[in-house]
Length: 156
Image 1 (cartoon, rainbow, N blue to C red):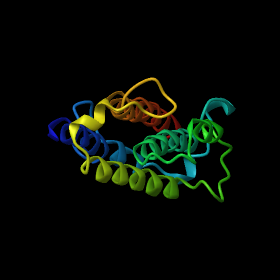
Image 2 (cartoon, helix red, strand yellow; image 1 turned 60 degrees about the horizontal axis):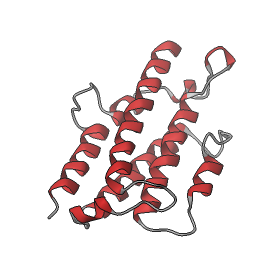
Image 3 (spheres, helix red, strand yellow; image 1 turned 180 degrees about the vertical axis):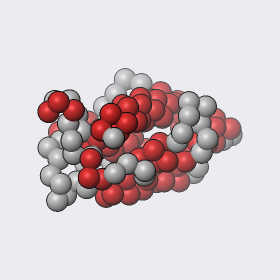
Image 4 (tube, helix red, strand yellow; image 1 turned 90 degrees about the horizontal axis):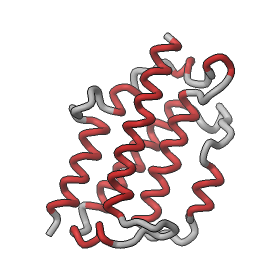
């Protein structure tokens, strides 16, 4: 049976590109932001828009690598690049959005090949299952989208 897997993939897609309950989708907001403002830190502190985006990428990639059962990309690998130093030559806003989309597309594609029993499997390096991880990914994206939307308006 794939009923719950399909519901989770719809939730991911709706959050990213659809018409979610909470307002505008993640990508509709990310794609309208002026890249020239994405490295600014309010009052010189906190996180820039680019830092927030790459933080979201880190944990989406962690989710992808756990689904793929990639032993080389473990929790330490994610933690090492979480809140990474942003090099504008490497970590551009446009590149980040492309990477964010690509990772989520891969996650959805892999999930659609699984059945609901996969959701009960324990996630490597964590004490919870894939149901918790996937719902957490959606919540994490929404949480940081709120910060991004607020910061973007503040910088305008």
